[in-house]
Structure formats: C-alpha cells, structure tokens
Length: 588
Ligand SMILES: *[C@@H]1O[C@H](CO)[C@@H](O)[C@H](O)[C@H]1NC(C)=O
Ligand SMILES: *[C@@H]1O[C@H](CO)[C@@H](O)[C@H](O)[C@H]1NC(C)=O
Ligand SMILES: *[C@@H]1O[C@H](CO)[C@@H](O)[C@H](O)[C@H]1NC(C)=O
Ligand SMILES: *[C@@H]1O[C@H](CO)[C@@H](O)[C@H](O)[C@H]1NC(C)=O
Ligand SMILES: *[C@@H]1O[C@H](CO)[C@@H](O)[C@H](O)[C@H]1NC(C)=O
Ligand SMILES: *[C@@H]1O[C@H](CO)[C@@H](O)[C@H](O)[C@H]1NC(C)=O
Ligand SMILES: *[C@@H]1O[C@H](CO)[C@@H](O)[C@H](O)[C@H]1NC(C)=O
Ligand SMILES: *[C@@H]1O[C@H](CO)[C@@H](O)[C@H](O)[C@H]1NC(C)=O
Ligand SMILES: *[C@@H]1O[C@H](CO)[C@@H](O)[C@H](O)[C@H]1NC(C)=O
Image (tube, rainbow, N blue to C red; front, side, top):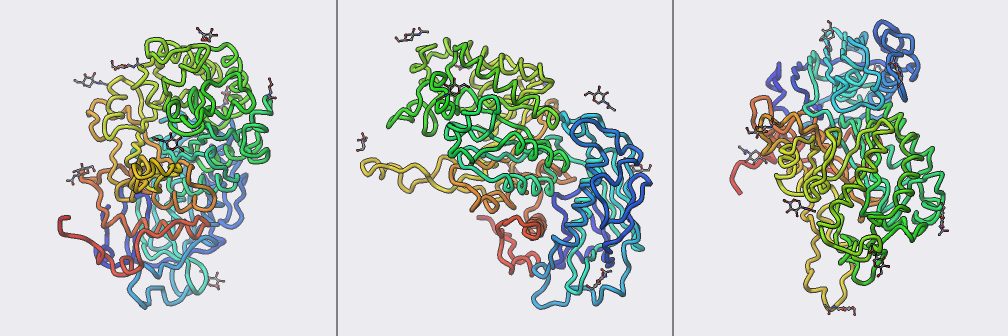
C-alpha cells in the first residue's frame, strides 16, 4: 500500500479498506455521493437508487452466464448492496479521529460530488459463474475515482466488479448533515485475490440457527470478500437438513420437528450466496459424526449413544457412526445423495463428504465389521468413500473431504478432490500438497473461532479436579492477531504453492447459537479473510503489520455493526482516536 499523502498515515483517520487491496493510492480531497448518481454497466444506464437485480439484463455480457445466476443479477445485486451500504448501513467515523475534533467536511453542499459510476466488464463470465470451480472466475478489478468525481470500476467478471463495488462502499462515510462522502479522493486501486477459495464455515447441527442468521453470515462473508460458505449441515447431535424423500431423518433427527432447513430454505441460502458471489458448499459428514441418523434408522448406526463411555467411540457425545460394510447404509447414502445433489448443483461445483474423526473402536460394535483393526477398516473406508465420490462425480460435482481421509486413512483419492486440512500446526497443508493434492488451509490452532470458551462437558465430582480449570481442547481463544499470523503457505515448497487453493475459517457451534454468533465470528473471521484475499505477507514479502491492520479491522467492525452484524470491538476507542498510541515496541 502506498499513499499519495503521507500525512494520512500519521493522522488517526483510517484509510479504511478490508481486506487491503494489492495496490492502493489515495489523496485527501472530499467528494460527496448522491443517491441518484448515474451508474452504467457496459454502457447500459441506470441510477444508483433505482437498480434492480434485472436492470442490466440486456447489457453486453449481462446474460452471458448460465445456471443459478446471470452476470446481470450479480451486478444488479452488487449495485443494490452498494446503495444500501453507503446510504442506509453506513456510520460516522468519530472513533477514528482525535477527541472532539471537527473531522467532518463543513457542509455537504459545497464540495464535489460523484458525477458518474461506470462499471466496465472486459470479458464474458464463465458459464459456471454461479457455481465456480476453483480458479474459473477471474476476480480481479480496478477502481479509479478522480478528484472531479468520475468513477470507473472494471473487471474481467461480474464477481470482480462486485468486489470493486464492495471496496467502493468502504471509501465512504455517513455525513451527520445528511448523505455520505469520501475524504480520500483521488483513489486508484488494482486488486485481485491471493487465493481463489476463501471460505467461512458454519456448523448448524450442534445448535440450530434460523435461516436469517445463516444469511447474515453470508452477507458479512461477502462483505469481507469470502467467496465460499461451508455449511456443516448435519452431525451426531442433530440432522436439521431436510431430505424430502426421507422425511423422518429430520422429523426424528432434528432437535425439534420445526428446527430444520427445508429444501426451499437450502435453495434460498444457496441462491442468496450465489448472487453475492459466495458459493455455498454443503457437507454431510460421514461415516463418523452421524449418530443423529439413528433416530430414524437405528439399523444403520453402530455404537449409538453409548453411555457413560461415549468417549471410547467418539470425540463427543453421542457416539455413533454409519456402519462400514452395510448394503443398507449404501442404499441410504444413495438415496440421500440422489435427493440432495441435483438440488445443490445449480449453486455449487462441490460437495463435502466429511471424513473427520473416524474412530476405529466404534467398529468393534459394528456388526458388519466387528473389528477396530486398520487393516480391516482401511479398505472398507476406501470403498465407502469411493461410493460417495462416484455418485458426486456422476452428478457433475467435485468432492471435498477432511484431511484424515488422505493423511490418516491413506485413501486413494481422485485429483478432483479438495482436501480440507485442520489438524497439525504446520504439517497438514505441506503433507497434502506433497501427495499432489489440492489443499485448503484452516489449522484449528489459528482459524477455529469457537476455541477458548472452556469445556462444555460436565465433569463428575470424582474426576472434576483433573480437568480444572476446564480449558477446551483448542484453548485459548484465537485473538485476531493470531488468526492474522497464519500463513496458509507456511512450510509449503515453492513448487507446490499452487496446490494451496485457499482456506476455511470455522465456527463450530457446541457453545454458539443465535445469541452469541455474530460476536464469535466477527470481526475475527475478517483476519482470515484478509490473509486469504491479500496474502499473509505484504508486497515486500514481510509479515503484515498489526499496527496498520488494526484500525482498518476496527473500521470494518463499525461497518459490520452498521449492516446489522453484532461484531465485537477489538480495542477501546482510545487506541483508535490517537493513531498508533496502543502500539507496543518492546519485546515481551
Ligand atoms: C449453459 O449450460 C448448459 C448446460 O449446463 C451448456 O450446455 C450451455 O453451453 C451453457 N450456455 C452458455 C451460454 O454458457
Ligand atoms: C478492462 O479494460 C480497461 C480498458 O482497456 C482497462 O483499463 C482495465 O484495466 C481492464 N480491467 C481489467 C480488470 O482487466
Ligand atoms: C445533503 O443533505 C441533505 C439533507 O439531509 C440531503 O437531502 C442531500 O441529499 C445531501 N446532499 C448530498 C450531496 O449528499
Ligand atoms: C423412517 O422412515 C424409513 C423409510 O424412509 C423407515 O424405514 C423407518 O422405519 C422410519 N423410522 C422410524 C423410526 O419409523
Ligand atoms: C459380528 O458379530 C455378530 C455377533 O457375534 C455376528 O452376528 C455377525 O455376523 C458378525 N459380523 C461379521 C461381519 O463377522
Ligand atoms: C497410513 O499410513 C501411515 C504411514 O505409513 C501408517 O502409520 C498408518 O497406520 C496408515 N493408516 C491406516 C489407517 O492404515
Ligand atoms: C466417577 O463417578 C462416576 C459417577 O458416579 C462413575 O460412573 C465413574 O466411574 C467414576 N470415575 C472414576 C474414575 O472413578
Ligand atoms: C512472520 O510470521 C511467521 C508466522 O507467524 C513467523 O513464524 C515469523 O517469525 C514471522 N517473521 C518475523 C520476521 O517476525
Ligand atoms: C517439488 O520438488 C520436490 C523436491 O525437488 C519434489 O520431490 C516434488 O515432487 C515437487 N513437487 C511438485 C508438485 O512438483
């Protein structure tokens, strides 16, 4: 990042962009923006306040894409969000200026205004823009705002332009006298993501969330330039995902009959994401993490809810795993997938088959196996996963799995399979790419948002002391600085970095529900968003500075609050008002 006016660096005023663009220069002139600013997309005219999702349908490239969303819908939705964000979900940045200072322009009528916004798409979207495969969409964009108020945002895809519009909104602040302004003109930005797969993951099975919570997470994810949303849809504790052809999976397996995601809810979630450039990837974890199937199909599950020794068979209560060598289980999976895959396909190129924390001992209680020996189990796990992946491929989708399938069970997996890593501190990504597979980074010691809450198990008095002070397995809580220090490319040899296609930051929900979701996720997930979009290193190859990131992340936090996301503060106002006065220069 370089600045035209270096004074801006020293002043507490924020230059506000999150994630930080690859190149960014700005000045210090004020420009207001009107609600009726003319905006065009490839020559097709409209005004900012009047754009609908179909306004640009007849523009060049507008109908180019195929499937769930067209280019014009992505652009239309992005312009609507731009309008909403600048005029209705904006904030007055007093926290980022000296105590009691007059930081605002003196009037909203004397200054320059944005005269026009020109959106220029240089190339046709790929047909799969609504359900992209990693790397198929060029997300780069340029943004130029001149001192006399002309704006040009260009991109090679509708998603690139949408990212440019997201960045554009972050240049503007609410004006206390009415309207909105940027203090940063002229602005020139060229930008592109470091990693093509940038994902937030949400577990909706340990605790249930209303659909509106899921949509709010997707909105905030898009605002942080995430482009995937991983829905961990089912687990041992509940099965909230409706499979219409198997109605009792949810009517018996959800926490309550109505705490479900119906087929139309899922479609709404996926359509909402696709329109925002966020591909919703559904996971049905298996063969472990499936005990909730036993409420409707007890014949399919081994070691179901073994008590009180559940921990002999599973990582969490209730224990229970799909039987590993059972034609009935295969028939069941065939039916679940036949029902679900064609419905998710319009919105995604991926389907996640899980595969984490498969515990050998559970298969001692599996009457189709009666063994906990790896030599017996490994070929059965291979066959199980092959069956699932074959059906996924037959539906035109690509499989995703948790790292254990490759690194612990040594399965032979197709080149099309993405491996989601989570376990060891630096090795899993490197080990995965060493086997020639594409990896997603997401080490739990950095990118699990739920860590550090302490235990949720209740300890009997006779053993309680041995767990005191009840830290959870991944405590302490991951401060945003720790999340920000995680480099997906750490320990990956230069000839394999192309195989690290991105990463996933995760919120598991054992101790999270609607009441604390927003502040558990935001703004910390933004730290991962910036690593994935901008890279862990700056243009000179150095670790990015917390000192310059911190006020920008606080600015993002205010912007999330303004759009209805109850993001937590990461500092007190003192640190924001007085620039770098909460910096630390001495070693700890
Ligand atoms: C739209 O998708 C269909 C099937 O997925 C494909 O055959 C067709 O070529 C696509 N059209 C365009 C314009 O990309
Ligand atoms: C699109 O084309 C314009 C004009 O040729 C160019 O200035 C701009 O950099 C291009 N944008 C992208 C993202 O390639
Ligand atoms: C200035 O504020 C007035 C009163 O709120 C508002 O009607 C007008 O649109 C604003 N002008 C600009 C340029 O934002
Ligand atoms: C649930 O429905 C299936 C048929 O889809 C049936 O085989 C099974 O017995 C039902 N479960 C219960 C507990 O009634
Ligand atoms: C596992 O043990 C049970 C009980 O002894 C028996 O009925 C079953 O046939 C055994 N299964 C296999 C695959 O050997
Ligand atoms: C996978 O391979 C490793 C290394 O050879 C071995 O230690 C491990 O037991 C294997 N896992 C299984 C499930 O066979
Ligand atoms: C602790 O107490 C529980 C409940 O009374 C009992 O089931 C368990 O066996 C005891 N554990 C040990 C290690 O003594
Ligand atoms: C940069 O960050 C990495 C990962 O956190 C760390 O191992 C390394 O020591 C840091 N480098 C410097 C110069 O601080
Ligand atoms: C990278 O280089 C190492 C060491 O030369 C080699 O073993 C490995 O196969 C290479 N990996 C790729 C993906 O080319």
